[in-house]
Length: 68
Ligand SMILES: [Zn+2]
Image (cartoon, rainbow, N blue to C red; front, side, top):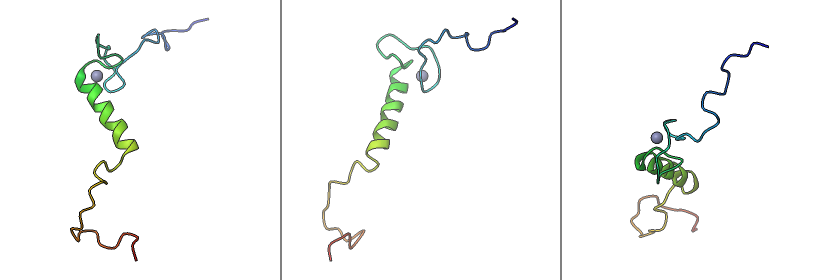
């Protein structure tokens, strides 16, 4: 069979999920703290869309929430 390099190029190694670069020691599987930070932010954004939903000081901005 003739099967050229199909998907054995990276040997299924871990790659930075952000930029697909080689992971760095200490930041695996990310390549750098920056990418690790990016992923962290994405993760947080996905779970907590609005991190600042705690402060509810009546500022009269988004009036009437669910308090009739
Ligand atoms: Zn990266």
